[in-house]
Length: 199
Image (cartoon, rainbow, N blue to C red; front, side, top):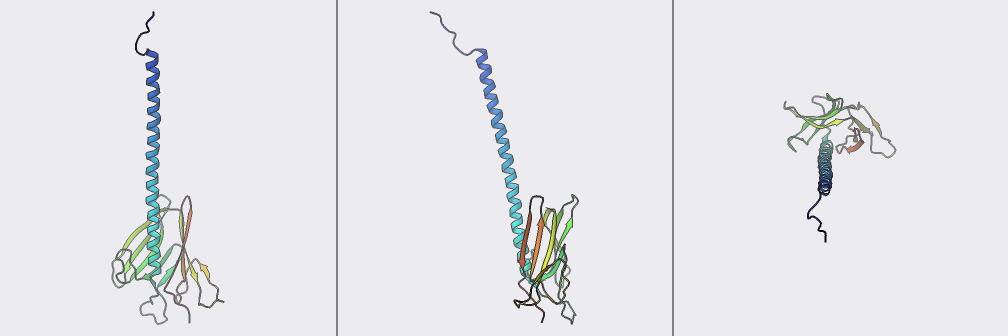
């Protein structure tokens, strides 16, 4: 009777080591890809949360706009200026101080060093020189402000969207903000609660 030698041959050991190494390489690659996707997901989730909070703050501040008259102006002209890249108004809601007094607010879009735009808000407590500036969003392709103009509440009076606000005796009914990102465009409309119509 012929006895076979106990153990593995060199070829069997080499094949086993090669298969185990291949399995480990595949597993390490899969883990690296999953960690990268988790990191990207967390960054995207944080960015979307920042967008949501920013939109909520802008909405609160614009809805708290007040039709404040200009100082020493007998014509009754209002403190409101609007163009396609800047809007300036008075509000009783401060992003930095909360609901403490009235502030002059300026939202503006500015170009950055990398060719993208950033949205800034500047606040100044009325009657006090204490300007505060916050960068709300960055990496934006474009920012555009538009204003809904309607002179009266009558149904037959039609409103229109304008890019520049020129009427100093009237307050806009709504403000539309369009943010252009590389992958999408976001448009949101904020109603202005404090309306003043022409009499």
